[in-house]
Picture 1 (cartoon, rainbow, N blue to C red):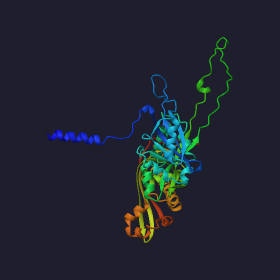
Picture 2 (tube, one colour):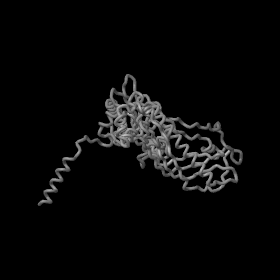
Picture 3 (cartoon, helix red, strand yellow):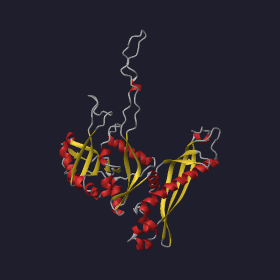
Length: 419
């Protein structure tokens, strides 16, 4: 009897937890894959969405991978919510953002301030909190509407591009929950990857055959066309790159870090997974130093009121490629020089990132205030009120050590120097 009572109680509890949200049929739903927010005229918002729209390749396939399986819907409104409602009216289906992958903020919109983004995306119950946030160079809608035929969806390809750039140490990703948290905790400051359209690669013009036909053995026209592989240009698609970092302060985009400084951010934030550096010895020979394991820690040191942040980096690396003159081989001294060169490269990238983002821009990146408060609470009490004024006075040093633990075949034999 007791077990039966528990069972009945469990049934009633489960019924009380059922959802009350309105349901929609799949064929009546527009599944959003990417959202762009731009600043329009008269202070309005322009929202552009990439919506999953499979284009079947025939009766046996529901999806044609040779096509861009997406539709683009764009609408404007006084608020982001109003723009979304207008977009729903334009394409006649229920907007579902539960599978959204990307939130791209237009450059001009980011410069004006992004506070209203959080008002909408923090409140919307269908918004995923782990979507990638990006800042576009130019209009965000131009990125969402890119003609990318690689894969099933353009948004999926863009998401994979961001992932690859993080994996290779170009940038530090900014999932929405982290972007929102950093903005709230650190005076509207955050670091966000920049996505930029670089256009289509140049195509070589095919030789004009003028409809010529080849001759058969008897001199008669065979009617055979020339080989399509040599005559037909390959269709190119739009290309993007993600290698820079947008710096926010007071909820506004104030600066953009270059590729080297962006790599410095990955070490400063201890988000580096692996990366490859081009090192050079004293004679000008080049080598590729691949870092496959890295641990970095940023901590403050105190000398009275003077605060110096020290970045300690310990990494293991392999030599993936060495360019030496004919007959020369890699020795222990060469490896030491390559390691020193890579260490100097990391130190320069990190110093450039810290000086630019913190000391020049005055952005509260890398949780510096939290570190000071933890290590020296008395000093933090004195400077917490006007900590922003102290950012330009901070000192920065690096302590970088790279251990070469693996050698490739190329590093153990003579390699012809490229000319």
